Length: 267
Length: 257
Ligand code: HEM
Ligand code: SF4
Ligand code: FES
Image (cartoon, rainbow over all chains, first blue to last red; front, side, top):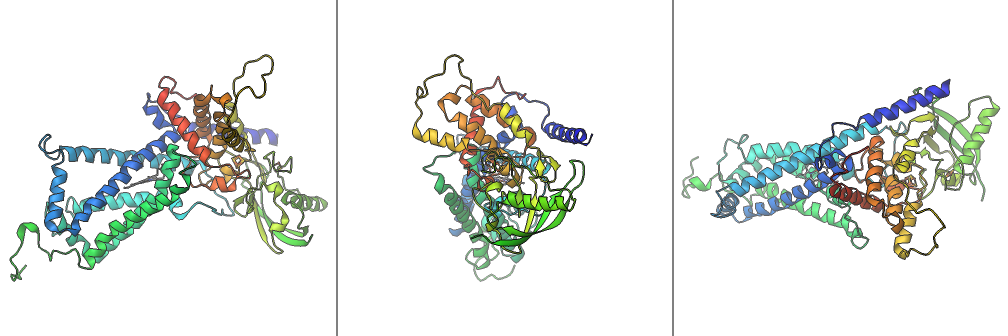
């Protein structure tokens, strides 16, 4: 009797697991996204897009080292992408929409893959020893949401000007200085970039596996590439809070739109 | 040199899939360091029987690392601390006198515990059934060397074919993903000329069967380090590519059974 009920139990458990997978079948090619390997593929593709964005965003921000006017001109240049052939900011908006879509897909696939893994996994009561899984790979589910929250704060701070009474629309140099000269804000940016660097470190290597980019000739360099990429992004991005704090990037509270003649010390 | 050591076992005991289960502390004294891990358990079981106690249920068959039945989680590592070793080939000389050894069954939702350390790995069978075959013409056996296979390809396919289906990859994976097993079973056929006819269907149907039961791969690499046959996660990458290729080129066939 015992044996029968045991088998039954195992069977119902298997059935339950199977059921967690089935839902309404979407038409091709959306059905690819209904498989987990397909989701992971989408996650890797959007990951590449996000990595590209993070890199370009950082390089663009290096204009801060040229000065307020050049930073403003760079921001204008982004709005003028496409020259006079297209309406102003159209290209920028297309890029933004692509970026928002990439984030949405990346987060949705991350959410559903993580949800699946919480269902399928069972904990070892006596603990488990990790042999090769590193800190970065084990914290993807934390660093991801941290980046997401930071991103919202970052947009509210420097794009919408919600947190900054000193915010001047169209003068990014001034706004960066106004925000990052506060120690807690600078610390927050550095913390978020630690999370980003960890995420990028595992993510960059992970892309190769997920997309099946695998050749014995280049395999040994994948981990190094991920490390260097994460380090470059990390160093570049934290240079901004650090150099604002140390006074290298500083406009003494003046916006390029309201520059006071030297000597006039009020306000 | 044979030595005798005393170890303390903390063993998972569970009478049936329905029971909650608990850890039992068992002193294993006078264990020869030449004994394999399973022989140590045999000795412990003899002693338990002598005092009319229920022996520890565990699985084993070949005891030479080829059948894949003997998997145990030993001190938080699948098949114990030794690299490229199945539990049956792990020896007690790996441990020191006075060591505590925690022994647990594989834990994954798809591998329900049958009793003590024995789990049901039948989802693996279902994965193989769904595509682990090739089609050959019947009739007289073909000349063995009729189909040329480059040496590197044959070697790589053989590396994948070394998988013994033990389930350590699932056990070691924090997501209980079966990617390494499934990839090995797919690639040892997909790499060879004989496997080309079903190559893409195989990748699709076996992956989709796998996804009914198991978690998803996050590329930690724990499976590779736990695998007694040192199957490489490169096979997972190739399988991902075959799967996506198949999905992209088969719009009509895009439904799972
Ligand atoms: C600029 C920001 C981001 C970049 C550059 C980025 C990049 C990546 C990359 C490259 C991967 C690896 C994909 C793969 O394994 O093939 C990845 C994985 C992941 N991302 Fe992101 N990501 C970003 C933001 C986020 C956000 C906002 C979240 C969550 C709210 C998130 C959650 C995850 C998770 C959970 C994984 C691992 C999931 C798994 O392996 O199954 N990421 N990310
Ligand atoms: S891939 Fe390795 S660990 Fe996984 S079932 Fe096969 S032999 Fe065992
Ligand atoms: S008993 Fe056969 S592999 Fe260990």
